[in-house]
Image 1 (cartoon, each protein chain N blue to C red):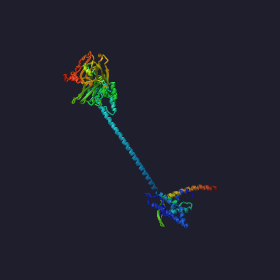
Image 2: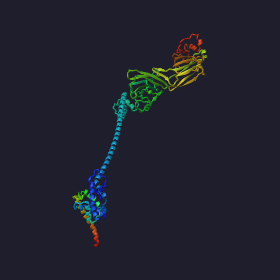
Image 3: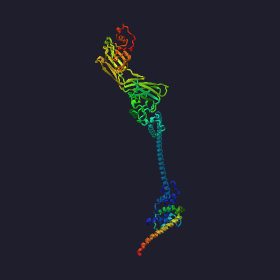
Length: 112
Length: 522
C-alpha cells in the first residue's frame, strides 16, 4: 500500500487494537496484519516508535510482566487515549464516507 | 536470536542524567518481539538461520530502532542539556561582555576623573589669578585716588574683563580713576598719578644754575649683584604714555595701555636694560627691586649703581648706598648731567734737552689720559671722544712731531690713530681734546745701547675749553694754549748718573728728587 496513506492511520489502528485490552508490541503487529488480511505490510520495528510516542502523549499506559523468562511490556488504553481514539474514528468515518461518496458516485454513474 | 544487550550496543554513551532503566527497557521490549517472531518463523521453517533472517527482514534493523527509541525517550533531556550548554555559553559570553563594559566604564570614569582633576586645577589657577588681579587692582586703586570720575568707566570695563576671567570685581571702582585709565589704555591725566611710596626716585638735572630736567638719556639701575631694578615710568608720566613706552610694553608681552611698563624694551650701550627718559618725565624716574612691575617695594640696604648714558655718548656712573636701619620709604638721588663737552686746543712744548742727552739718543713722550668728570656722586666719561693721547716730541727743538689718540666706538677703545705733525709749522701742531681734567705722564727715555735711561713725571692738570678762563695748576694761556713740559726736579741729575756715571761720579747728586713732583710751566 501507499505508505503516505498509512502514515496518518497507524496511531489510530494501534489505539484500536490496544482498546481491546492490554497487549504488547508483537501481538499488536500480528493483530493489525490479521485484521487487515495482510494489507498493512509494515516493518514490525516501525511500530515501536509509534507506541512510545502514544505513551509519551499519555494516550497509552504501560506495565511490565515476565513471560517465559523474558520481560514483556504491555500497553493499555488510557481515558485520554479512548477519547482520542473516538475522535480519530469519527474523523476517519467522516473522511471515508466523503471519499466513498465521491468514489461511489463515480462508480455508479455509468450504470444510471 | 539477538541477545538484548546486542540490540542496544550501538546506542550513544549514557547521559549524565539518563535514567538507568531506559536502555534495559528498550532492549527487553525489542528482544521480546524478536523472540516471539523467531519462534513463529521457526515453526514455519525448520532452519534457524532462515527463521532469523526472516525475522530481521520483517522487523527491520533492531539497533536502528533501538537508537530511535532511545533518542525519543531522552529527547527532552538532550534538548535540555543542549539548551543548558547554550545557556552556559551565553552566560560566559554575557559575563565577558559585562567585564568588557565594566572595564570600559572604569576607563571612561578614570578619564573623566582626570579631566575633572584638570578642570579643578584650572579652576584653582583661575581663582588664584582672579585673586591676584583683585590685589593688583586694589594696589592700583591705592596709587591712584579718585581724581577723574570720567575714567571710572574704563575701570568698570576692566572689572568686567576680570569677571570674565573668573574673578569678581570686589573693589571700589570710583576711587581708582587713574588706575582705570591705565588699564583701559586711555591717556593718563596730568597730575592724576601718585608716585610710588617705596623704591628709588631719581631726579636727573642738567648742570647749571637752573638745573633744568634732563631728557633723552638712557638710565639703568643695578644693585651690587648687577641685577637690574625695575622702572615705574607710568607713575610719573604726566601727559600720557609715550610711543616708545607703549612699544616697550608690547615687547614685554603686555598689551598697549595695560600695566605700567618696566624697561621699555631698551638697552644701553653695555647691553643692560635701560629706560629712555623722555622730556615729559621732567627728569624723574622711579625704580624698585620688585619683580612685579606693578608693585614698588622698598630698597634693601646695599650699594647701588645708576648708569646714565647721555645722547652725546657720555656715560655717567652714579653710586649710592642704602644703609642698614634706614627708614623704609622712597629713596631719592639727584644726578647732575654735565653740559655738552667743549673742546680744548692745546699746543705742547717739551723742555729742551741738553745736547749730550740728545746725543745719547734721548726722546720725549707724553701720555695724556682724561679724568672722569665728577658732578656730585656721579662720574662722567665719554664713550665717543678719545680719552688718551700719546704725544711725541723732537728732543732737539722740543716741538711735538706727532701724536696718537685712542678712538672709541660704543664705549670701547677700537684703534690707535696716529697723526704726523712734523711737516706743520710749530703754531699748527696743536692737539684737539675735550676740555677737562687730565693726567699727564711725561717720559724721557734713551737708547738702551748707551745704558738706557728713563725718567717720568706725572702731572694732574686741567685743559679748559677754548676761550674759558685759565684755571688749575697748569700754567696755561687761553690765548696761546701752549703748554711747556719741563723736566721734573732732580731728573737731570738722575739721568746723568745713569747715562754718564763716570762724569757724574764727581758731581754732587741731588738725592731723592721725587719723580712725580713735576713742574710743568709755560
